[in-house]
Length: 208
Length: 173
Image (cartoon, rainbow over all chains, first blue to last red):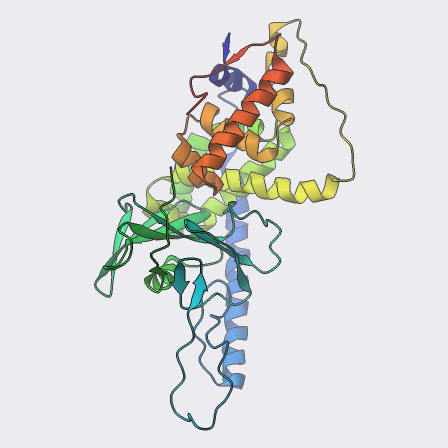
């Protein structure tokens, strides 16, 4: 009888092998330089665009504009106040807006899956590269962040991170979470997003 | 954070962890050494780019493993599109006359798993991660991990047995 762990240990190859860590460093430094050049170029382009358009846009830092006003056409009878954007409802969850270019892929009592329009992975319970709102009854854990009198917890797992918070009074008891790809959104933006998520009575805790 | 500090810490991390990451990548790619090396290079570069955040999170090994797994899944998704018109001829049953063949037989069996099943096997049975951590790294539910694990073990056994009998303590977990 062979233990699978032992089989995999052998198949993985030798536990020591020669390599040059400085080759990895050089490669990574070049990538960092390219990234910084690209960001500088994008920053300059952004400043130029803002100067031409002359309006401020609330946006997620990494991805697109918030879909802030999907119903309001210009109405001369309401000249001063900008109407509040309607909430997005997906299953038992409501939240203020979707990132521009993203859509709700699936809404279930346990989770809402949000992905870029046309995202190749259409599996509703496959979460990689997607924004996932969830509800469970585990105690929140992670790095604590205070925002507007509410406590949020951040778990940074590399390409994916999770922010969570206890549900509000009147909502089902537990924690509400947002899992997101870190390449697309910043933690700060996702805390802001999570602060706008409301959990309705139809929410069911994710198992596991 | 000064660049030199980042560089020093990064080189220390690479020195300590590169071989382990390459072994993990070798299993994920089912023995494709060039593909494994590409995955590790991609992972280490991402790690360096995000080093301040990696440092704050305090778990660079976990970060690197997650990043490597994601790089593998992404690459497989792209590769699937490239090769979906080709037909692979695979060996259905393992045979081995010599104990030295064992690693190759195991890698050949891994190659017959779907990429995410292979990832579950590597995370659960090579890295010894629990179900919740495996689900978090793969961005799926714990139920999906359990079902993928069961299917993967069935497939491995169908390929390897009776020549190689596979046991695991995590059968139902």
